[in-house]
Image (cartoon, rainbow, N blue to C red; front, side):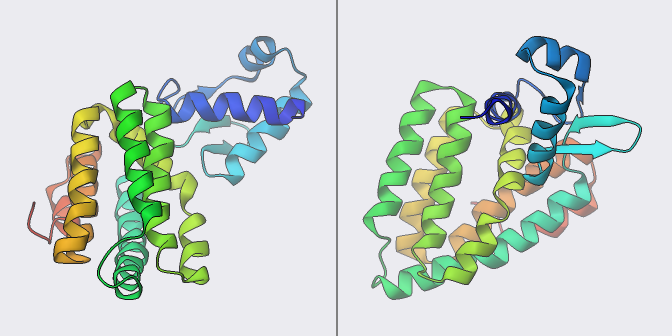
Length: 219
């Protein structure tokens, strides 16, 4: 692993575990001293994180950890719902109403991460579970489009951390997998809408925006 990759990995972990919350300024002097690297190396690392969507670099203002705005949360919900709900429909259709073992294994890994309680591994396992559901559709273009959202999806979950207990995270996703096999893709729409509406309420206090993603009745 190169020096740049080492710095990227360390900062990524801090961001996704909530140690560096959205909106926090990333001070070059502090980070170069902490990681023992040059400004050139640090800036290369920050550019990689910006490409992942985890950092925003503003001209003459430096870099900050990305914080999703209310508008971005709504847009992410809409796109994620379009991709994941259709993927779930195809997955169930192609696997005779069941989800493949890869999805159940990903759920088990998320439950294990929740039992350990560290948010970084929970965030990664959460992404793997939703990715496994999408992959089960066996649609390369849907899978590629969903993979492109990975950075934003993990930021979304990092912002959700103060609102969702690890116990709820495990229980909600166990219910999601059971519900998909029992009731179909509508369960996934409700699942996504619930977390998006909660985050909107906390971030913006905007009841009108929350209603846009709260159309499906709560579970």
